[in-house]
Image 1: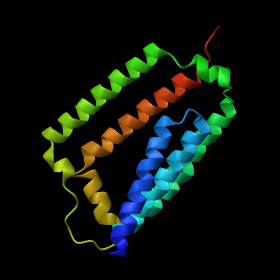
Image 2: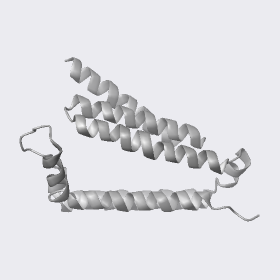
Image 3: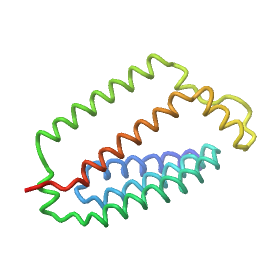
Image 4: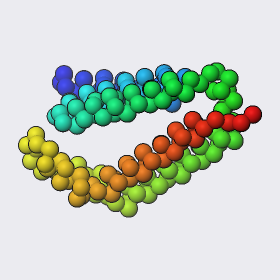
Length: 166
């Protein structure tokens, strides 16, 4: 009972952190909302008995990647005028269209590969070896798709960081 309440509480905070990430106009607040979401996801992994994934979530995402994003944002030193100049309506419409196309691709991929939604059903021993074996055999396609999404995020960060000539 307590585990279920904790699960729903952490899920609600992760969802609120994601909504805050999308709706916040300050890049620093966006990073902080993302860190909140990552810690809540680590808590969700703990409630599901996946301690290894919880620790990796904190070390890799909340620790390394978000700190890197925070340092990049601080080094860019974006002023309010820069943020308002980048608020283009055509760029925003293009981003929404690309987001819808990406969502359609995800729905198609999950419909074409029904085994992607199946969780690991083997005996849980608490070791990393079965997780790695499943990740690099049965779940190789989603694992590689994550690299494509990270590459797209890197290209987006480079496009944002590019200085616009007046």
